[in-house]
Amino acid sequence: MRYEYDSVGQLSHCRLPDGCTLDYRHLSGGRLSSIDLNGSRLTSHQFSAGREQQRQQGLLLSQYQYDEQGRLQAHSVSQRDKHLFQRRYNYDANGNLAGINDSRKGNRSYHYDPLDRLISVRGATPESFAHDPAGNLLGQNDLPTANLANVKGNRLLMQGDRHYDYDAYGNLIRERRGSGQKLVTEYRYDCQHRLIGVSLPGGSTASYKYDAFGRRIEKTVDGHTTEFLWQGERLIAESAENRYRSYIYELGSFRPLAML
Picture 1 (cartoon, rainbow, N blue to C red):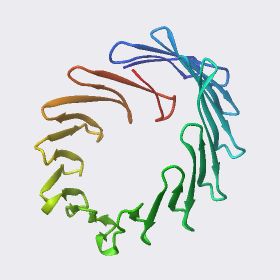
Picture 2 (picture 1 turned 90 degrees about the vertical axis):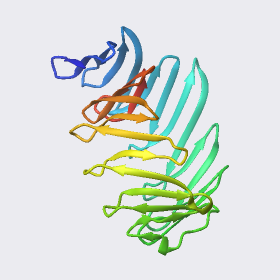
Picture 3 (picture 1 turned 45 degrees about the vertical axis):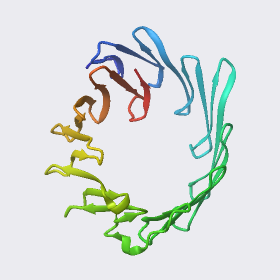
Picture 4 (picture 1 turned 45 degrees about the horizontal axis):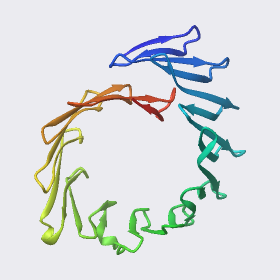
């Protein structure tokens, strides 16, 4: 990775590990105006009062509206003046998301208990939830509600036919399910409680490696290895035997912008 900055310290150029280049253009005031990939326009952006109002990605145009508290109120996506979908959001007095009006999926409303825990969703696919006094989820939809004996130390011990075992540090080490609980998935951890291995009932195995900062840098699933490259805390690329992917983020955030 190589970076270049403009006279006021803003990122202006970046060379990715695969040789691709990104050029960032900013408006006066520092707002991002556009990003070019290898000399071709990747995205363009319009801001107002510090909030993104419009984003163009190829033929897709995304537009955003906000309420007086800065919360997203509407989001629409169009292509060549043809509306693909639109969503509108509303909130309750406590700031919880109360409803979504989706042009493709219809309306959904969300309902909460006095502690602001989600207890039901109404719409095309209704959902319901039950919690214990500590906020642990005990039941969902028509599944049997767990009793408090199945949640010890805020760790779930059983859900349906699934039984969970933990080590002395609270890490999940085993999941047993199926007839006679014969389908067993096992998890292994290193001395820093990072997951380093998984074995599945069918015989598949996975292993994981980390760098000195705790970032996962490699996984191997049934002999096939994928390597991960990082920029600080952001994953910027992954490389496998026949695949290479780069990830681009919105400036100064962890929100993904594009996958190359």
